[in-house]
Length: 480
Ligand code: 5AD
Ligand code: SF4
Image (cartoon, rainbow, N blue to C red; front, side):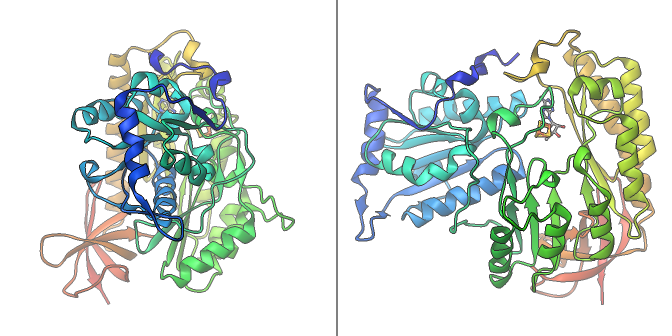
């Protein structure tokens, strides 16, 4: 059990700065940033940052925004923590293993830490652990959860002014983190957060605690950013949210999620629109109708089910039954365009019997997903399932996970085999070291590796004929 992460929600105070009674390492650290000279515009000159990201796409995109804020303050990004005056870890706490990684990284890093560096912990572990991080790793100076990123400039100013213990841990907000200065990693596909936080209360999940309540971004603001992205040359946008389809436009336009999808697709220059992650409860026929209507909306839906057993779903507080979930699947399968469906499943939730697990396996057979992300249940601090009886042993969880993954491998092998001889429109995003070998994604979000004699394909869309297919790979060749 992750007892060391336990904190009460009461301890999640808002923005605060602790007094300067800190270790010598901490003191020298922020003095370093103080020493960086200020330019006439008030930005830092000579300061550098290193930022490492753990976890999901939301975290990746948060890091892009954080990097943008730092660059606009005059920091330069460097590739190694050794070379940075500010070292930041954007952390994930969805499962215990992910959270542990951060502390082992901090521990590892301590021995290598150069004099005068400022260390910051961002993201979900920061939110979860709060000021406890200063106890566990006294060489850390900044602890900031994702719901407080909009205060980052303020927090950075405090660090630069020499404060030793700076925290942003507020989740009580109706604001989203919007910044005009996002520094995007991928030159063709842009992530765009349209809803932050989560109001669902799945019994196993830390997200409602670490990312706070749902806050949607105004549709005009989203559409303006998409127009800017298109002008910058991005042709694919991916709308992000923990429950992206629970989007509720706070502006007077009151656009529905499906209307927003269509409006984004309508922006000149945009060729592909993706969205993730959808919650089954809010997944309506209007979203399927939008995908049917608009070819620019990618024909892929990630619809986490978590379990095939209605009893376990009820214990998880997922708010739907197996039958209700299958109705959503039927809607997707009946669409005029084939839509790829992927899911998340947790095995070994407390009280999951062999019969419950058999129902998950039978759901896999029934739906025949195109992709699966599967996890062993991991007890997390503050979550209701932490205290549920009938824990499943690690050994049994591993056994169930292996069976589930083997079943999915079979299904994927069979499904992919039917794709032999079909053509995909592929956005090329990678070039192999092997000559004439490229890779990219289809609209249905499959990775396609292919051969082409052409040069400079990166960022272009090409037609690929599938010539071989395994459970996890599609190979093909470019056709004109
Ligand atoms: N244990 C295991 N898996 C979890 N997930 C969320 N919380 C937990 C947990 N405590 C999984 C869910 C979710 C995905 C992002 O991570 O399947 O959909
Ligand atoms: Fe977690 Fe459930 Fe919200 Fe997804 S919908 S982020 S699993 S609480």
